[in-house]
Length: 209
Ligand SMILES: N[C@@H](CCC(=O)N[C@@H](CS)C(=O)NCC(=O)O)C(=O)O
Image (cartoon, rainbow, N blue to C red; front, top):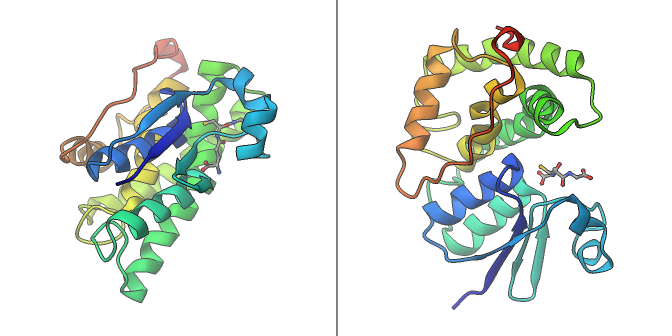
């Protein structure tokens, strides 16, 4: 029997990737809504001194960082599954995309969305530059791969999904990236998929291709 609690918000892509894995693994969990005001409380800082969501609690175990949480959930509840292969080369492929989720995706499309939707104090032009350098590479990879790391869905796909899906909400159009849009639809078709709330698009002229 498990007792899983997830701290996050529905609009956070970092939280959404964890929710995707929880629902795809069929794991029940309690969701604690944790807006920015609730992240500076003593109680929350005890869970994550970095004051960031998501945080996952499973019984006595506290895990921070969305990608680390996904590694934990697979190792704990779906070991040796397609979500995180044991094969050294495949595991390295998964890790490569987890790094891109925390790098180019976080500081590209995710940053642009944070600025446009939440007035995050980040540099919008720098975010656009990262996004536009990365998306053609992502498109090229997905033009010849159904999933990012192996022949099946892995946590790499879930880690990259939410902020790439939300790119238009940051003013970054996906219109010229058919392989990316095909891959998004494949992930949306996986059993257990749940969508994030849709945010209003910035004005049309702000959509940068
Ligand atoms: N590397 C972390 C990043 C998490 C993150 O940046 N969370 C955002 C919300 S989406 C947050 O809590 N930001 C508040 C802050 O950084 O102070 C992860 O993957 O979980």
